[in-house]
Figure 1 (cartoon, helix red, strand yellow):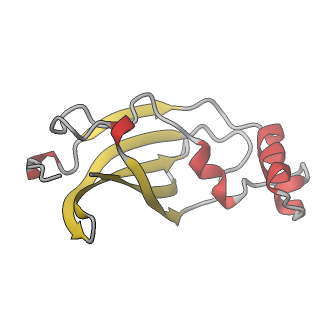
Figure 2 (figure 1 turned 180 degrees about the horizontal axis):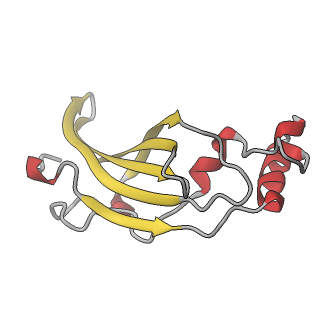
Length: 142
């Protein structure tokens, strides 16, 4: 799928969501669902923090930028992986702000033909402005 993408769109912020404060109960339930037994993730108290993978549970209102060319719709893409850079731990009471930007778009040719990759960057920060995580989510289109 050869698609021309306007490079001026790189960095385009297409979604901002302010999530309600995280509760200790949500953090503990998430960790226990993973099978984690570490008390730092499963026991209430001053040391409680979110399991590192908790950051991927946040979702925006818009999964994809609206300014991409026709043929690069979210529902037509396949998840091609995530890179996660962790920041400060999420703690009970943290209100997370999620900002989604178009980070990159590029083409590759493989054995099965041309593929277009769209990389969305999701930046999560807490109410103090501290970075909680940066997630680069890749989608592949044929």
